[in-house]
Amino acid sequence: MTTVQGTFDIERWDDETYLDADGIQLGAVAVTKAFRGGLEGTSTARLLTAGGPVPTSAAYVAIERFVGSLDGVAGSFVLQHSAVMAGGSGDMSVRIVPDSGTGKLTGITGTLRIDRHADGTHSYQLDYEV
Image (cartoon, rainbow, N blue to C red; front, top):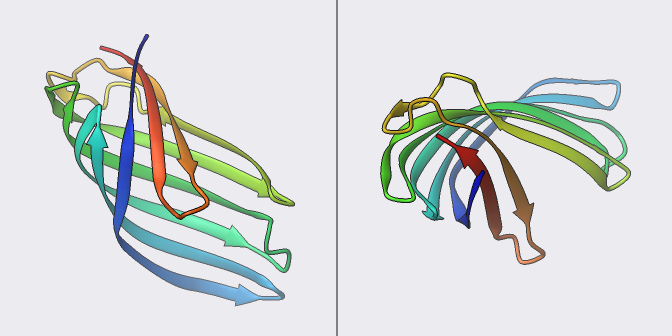
């Protein structure tokens, strides 16, 4: 496995609550990100979110397509997100969707770790093979 790291900015976050009943909110979010570091490029994602009366408990799933370069190699790939937070402690899984790589990234596999820092910035670590 090869590892790259970097940061990303959320350039667009358009959320819509499509259900708000009995203290439960279900939402859909359109997101655009700009990546720097080992990944250079942009991504577009769609998230489905769930939250309830306890603000430190929530969940989301997402599909995200990255387009740009990885360690200078051009192409694209798709990421699948799944995350659950309970009482402020969470579990997140972000994997590259098998056979989603294009260009010179055809055949890519791997996992992505995302960290959100106290100042609101985001960093990532991608472990991958092509």
